[in-house]
Image (cartoon, rainbow, N blue to C red; front, side, top):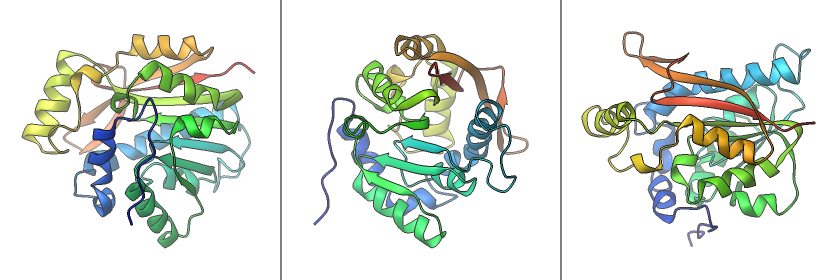
Length: 250
């Protein structure tokens, strides 16, 4: 019997069903998550560098995030969680799609990684009172209902001095042309209908949501694709993809 997906005010059932249907395709480097796999090193480096700069100035070179508790909300099948676990982080990774979690657990076991995967929602986890050194809402806020409430829930789970990291798509004409027309219809990087441009979030809106939770904006950076080298890089250009880090006052 297939486990039912947990629901909450922020969960969009249509998006849960879409990502739940990916199954093993999450880990196909040439499948529908290919762009996310290509983007992943840039995301990992961004999170690692900020945490090391601010929280772990002296850390083992082979496990620089050792001892840090990190929560990955909307973890999918663990594409971001696994490399952070390899860096020593104690990962708790949640997703409302049960198939995603099943695939994530199996892949982590095959990789020899210990990750606390849970089929649950941010709201249900927040109700337990757990706190983390960093809370990740990466490529997820453009898929939730009630963005501001979702971000507030995530912020509650960051400990004093901890961080919230977000990555999302800006709502611009350029993002519509590249992320939807280009990525979904021309390049076929992701399935048609994966994104709704109306749910894209400007940096100003995201910063306002984070500040409303009492967080301080620590950093913002754009992320751009370089077709010559087939790789993603950080940039001053936030017109399409961007990342943001916010810190809870200690």
